[in-house]
Length: 141
Image (cartoon, rainbow, N blue to C red):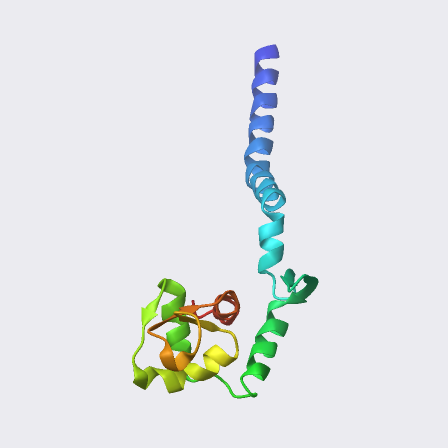
């Protein structure tokens, strides 16, 4: 009789543990990764420091600021493909034919020239942090 009762209690405890395992695992994962999850939410804020000034903003606001710096002109597919390519590579060699299409990206601060200086004298380009942020916010990277 005591053995029978102990087996029933063990079965009940086992079923409770089985029932609560995944919610507990999910709760622990959410707790441990809450900062990362929060940063991925659309309205989440990021903290930036530019020239010694620190401010908070959202990725959509940064994206809109970049679009405005492009003269309210949307990026072309060729420009997007350059940004995506530059995000995955350290540096990309360019030719004179590329420079006219890359100029708005450089003027908006999305890419940097190599060597530093004028785009007309550049041999290659690199993506800037701002360019990386734009690619990530767009979901294209």
